[in-house]
Image (cartoon, rainbow, N blue to C red; front, side, top):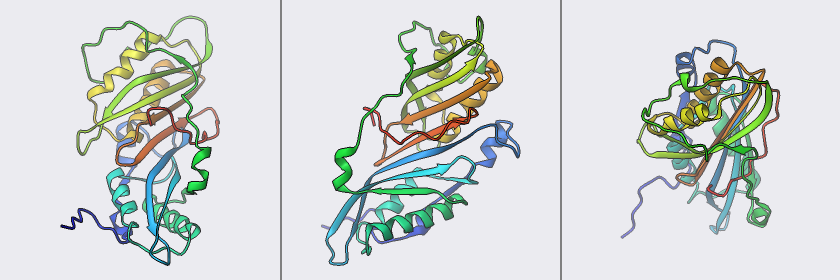
Length: 264
């Protein structure tokens, strides 16, 4: 029996834009963004047919600037990619251009798309987020709601990079868990590490899109700790053949290379 649970012929209407503005308004962001950056997506399950009907496979890296009006809901993105499975495409270059056009249309502004072909798979690297881990700190957690008051500062100003692999948030549509490593780079008053870890771990029952969660973390640290400069970068483990990696900064840093971590 043939079971077809999804469309396998090209259908850009499957993409579902999600406006960024309502969530940002909840965070107190109005017209001017307090950060720059981008959302780095990796699509691991990309396939189509060549002109002879022979299946082709690739991966894709997508860079969505943080100032686009919309993000794309991830399940709709997966369904959209699946719609190429039985679709003839003239060339990888043609596919790349189609992805760029459709995703840019859904996001409301241009996005970057790069197709990674099988002969390039061997060049893929695994790197962990650089920085000093705070995960070994002994803390007590009783309240599973993000509370910015856990964020405290004190002592001599520093410039440091801290990382944690204990971030867990939840999809606001399905309730499924989303796991991530997070990197926080800042300069300014020293952030209390135990309080920071308590704050990050308290997202464990929080529902929100990856992008929204990272922006909340960025703004809570910015407002509570008042660093001179701040970068927050999360790499979420893949689900449905996609990973989403939001990067936000007010330090003028370039968007990093999209290099997966071991858990991705």
